[in-house]
Amino acid sequence: MDKKLIALKNALDKATNIAVLGGAGFSTESGIPDFRSRDGIYNKYKDMNPEAMLSAETLRNNPELFFDFYVDVMIIEGIKPNTAHYFLAELEKKPGKHVTIITQNIDGLHQEAGSRNVIELHGSAKRYYCVNCKEKYDDRKMDKSQFAGKPPLPRCDKCGFMVRPDVVLFNESLDSRNLERSRAELEKAELVIVGGTSLAVYPANMLLMYARKADIFVINKEPVNISRFVGDQNVTVIQGSLGKVFGELMDQGKSGTQSN
Ligand code: NAD
Image 1 (tube, rainbow, N blue to C red):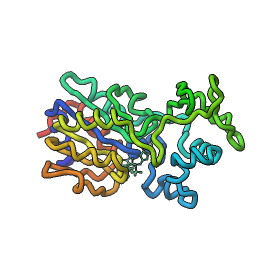
Image 2: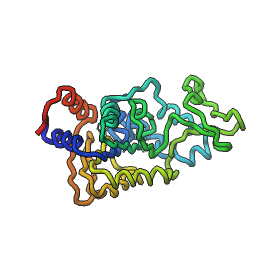
Image 3: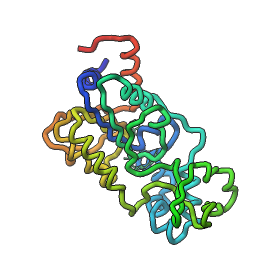
């Protein structure tokens, strides 16, 4: 096994408090495109300005346009968790491990894989709520089959107002309780894994500043600029796919091979 992978395996064996700061790259191997890769949503829809489409302003001023784009781009059916999700779910079950996943993703795949301690910084595309009476709905409210042609707006069964996804749109604030919890977990973590994120999105990227006593491992396909968010901790960068890295660690675990 590669030296850096051995170091990661040893760090995972040793640490009690482990935090994962993850992004869209966790789910590309499940078939959900990320935002900023070559095959990502920004490139595919660059003429449509995805950030503006997925903004609080578009939802407010032109909800038909918002839902048209949201349903097409952000709702992908039949998606399943991948090796990276399952690896972390198994890790959480190991005795003596306190694992927290702080995710920017809205796809719910960590929970579907079995992880319980997940902080969804940007909410969840699996949940909806009424903008008026706050009645909650699950994703059956947005069954793609109802959107043949121009989408009708999803309406609340109780008050008739618009129902919206429980996700943090561009120009909306993150839930302060999620930020506080993330901060506390990062402060006590001895090991932080940063995976599948360009670290371009504020304030998720700034949270790393709280990981002061942790060894940090970055697993990302493309280079990311992490130095501006961390101090003098050990930072190990593994450039590659999360599926491959966690797949190898999983195989090691099964074979029980010692890594020194
Ligand atoms: P991003 O698109 O800015 O960056 C993704 C990074 O992951 C890239 O650097 C890319 O090289 C890397 N990557 C892609 N596939 C990988 C893999 N298999 N293994 C390792 N690295 C991989 O995504 P971001 O930093 O998460 O920020 C974008 C925002 O987009 C987030 O706020 C998130 O809410 C939202 N988003 C979520 C989903 C989702 O829920 N699955 C999908 C798209 C976008």
